[in-house]
Length: 106
Image 1 (spheres, rainbow, N blue to C red):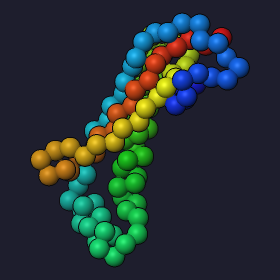
Image 2 (image 1 turned 45 degrees about the vertical axis):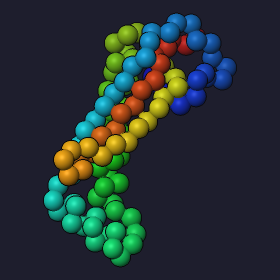
Image 3 (image 1 turned 60 degrees about the vertical axis):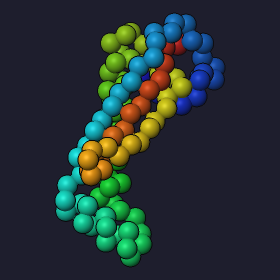
Image 4 (image 1 turned 90 degrees about the horizontal axis):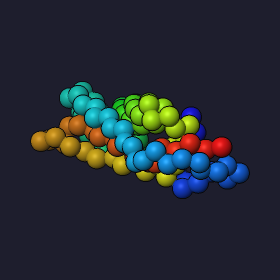
C-alpha cells in the first residue's frame, strides 16, 4: 500500500478513484504524563511522553486509513492530510485524524 500526501504519484497512473477515506485515533493522556509535561514546559525542552503518545496515535490512524483503503480494493492513498487536536473537558485527550483518497494505481 502506497501512502502519500501528494495528489498523484510520479510515474504511476491513477486508474480508479475509490473515494475519500479517514482514520482516527483518540488517546488519553494520564496524570503522570501531564505532570512531567508541565515540568518540561517550565524548564524547557521536549516532552518525550507526549511525543510518543502522538506517534502512537498517528500510527493507529494511518493503519486504520490503510485498512479502509484495502477494503475498497485500493492499492494507494493520495492527498493524505494529518490533523492533530486536543479534546476533552480538560484537554486530556489527543486526537489524530488522517484522510485521503483511496485509489488504484497502475
